[in-house]
Length: 339
Image (tube, rainbow, N blue to C red; front, side, top):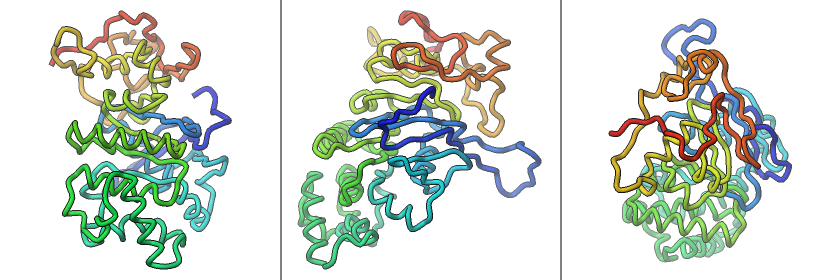
């Protein structure tokens, strides 16, 4: 990204997360998986930034690196200007009170042996925010009621709830310590469509009430369109396009973004068939040279695209794309095949 926003509450600067496969001896860079490969982004106070892309593009690796759950290989993660890659474990624990997460799987993310009260109160206990069990019970009850559950649910266990209710418990846990930023890693992908809408509405209401910032990760652009202010499109560990949700949906510049949008059911005209990108996602341990999207791209020129990796560049007021041949015409073909 060309410039980092000075008003951002959360920033990444040239963030990289590489994995070296275990069990075999590797020489040099051979076999290294570049899950996150030079990502820069910013999230302002009260804003929702969406990260979208196919499965395996590095979205969850990015989330884990930002949260320092799986520290980055290099680069910076700044929260209120403080680089989390350089702080002590003690300082990081203090920051995590203000930087929380809602995980993808509402079944795996809650400890089945714990009561709902124990689960939701965990951040309060870790950060020493409550002095008595009575105070803890009151705070948990208030948090549960705020996400549409009952304070009486605190004594129950996760297996007694539906998937949507479990995700509400996860949201209550994330918000009980009054964070400034919440990272939502595919928070509705495991839920039915009707339940998805309820959870998304809840997230919007909580954001408006508390002026929260969200980093919202999803593979589903139809979900992203309902919640986010800006969109960053990710492919093989890199950001290939960034812009407001209105700009991205109205006139995407990158062929990959255009192809993703073509697969959104609500954007198909005349009830057309679903479309998918031609070709397979490349092996992340052996990515293509140059523009990593070029083997699947209808605009591939066979020379520049295959040899030189494009940088993000400004193609509108604030819209950026990493493409040698960006699509500047909203009516340009998508370059996908029917499925």
